[in-house]
Length: 174
Image (tube, rainbow, N blue to C red; front, side, top):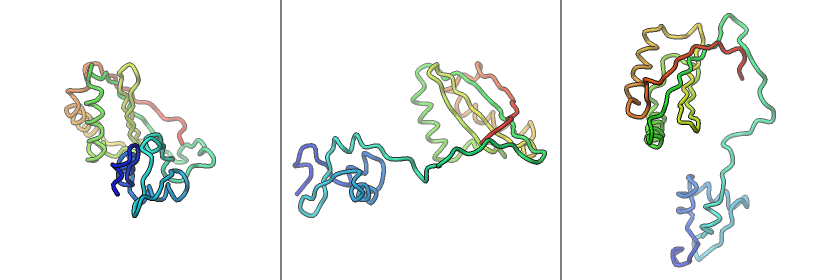
């Protein structure tokens, strides 16, 4: 029997494709009662509507309590380079695709930084925050080379003429 013969019903593989997980994860969701399924001959079928409305839980173990604020005990301090730049009109989707590629290929990691964050607001301003430990921060030449490389890779989607650059001290962090 084929699930396509039943309107509104899909196979485990189709459910996995929609949710973005493996077939074995779908079986786990069914076993735990998070998704309902029914047996049709040798296979399980699921409701297309239920699968489309399904929301996965957060990955990993959830924190029971928020982590405390911290600061370094030694002479190290955290610094953040904050870059704000305008997204070119109509280029938001292209920017997201480019960022997805950046994530997948692990490029533009910026030398010796502790953390990187890229976020956008509804006004089309992208904010890049590069966090450094002052004792490990690369020299100015290396920082500029890394930034120029990033600027060149994103020149068609970001208006670098509008960019502002600020170096800030991080007073507390988690």
